[in-house]
Length: 163
View 1: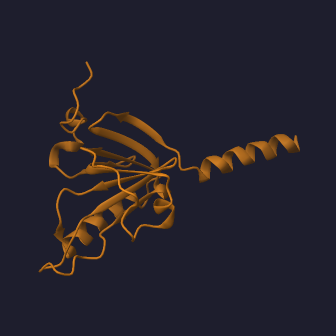
View 2: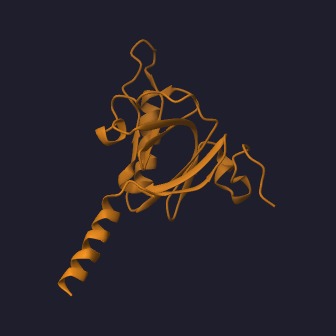
View 3: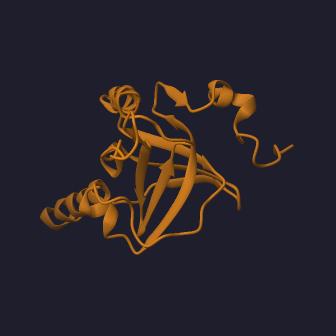
């Protein structure tokens, strides 16, 4: 009995610390991936100093297995605005346990994410960079484009709907 309880505890512990999640859909131009809240990081990296006013690119990181997925906003925003948008996404995550992020139009892979990301995101074997489309929690959805949270816009214009 003791060994059975120990085995169950070890299995539960390994699931809690895992960076696995679920890829709901992926094509060459689209990814819909889910993981625990602990495997998501959102940032407005330090602003570009030469810009007036200072600007930053809102970035989402999602860790899944040995891959860090980096999702970028589509354009640089004033740094203050970037921080406000970041705060609104972090508020969404506050009571969430799972997070889904959808991205489109992948970039060529690079060697590592932006320097300010925590080390667990930087130490991945693989990196994929996508344009951010939307973020879901169990109760909320927020998207870059207004209509991308609607069910009929699931593919964010990047893949045919399955019939």
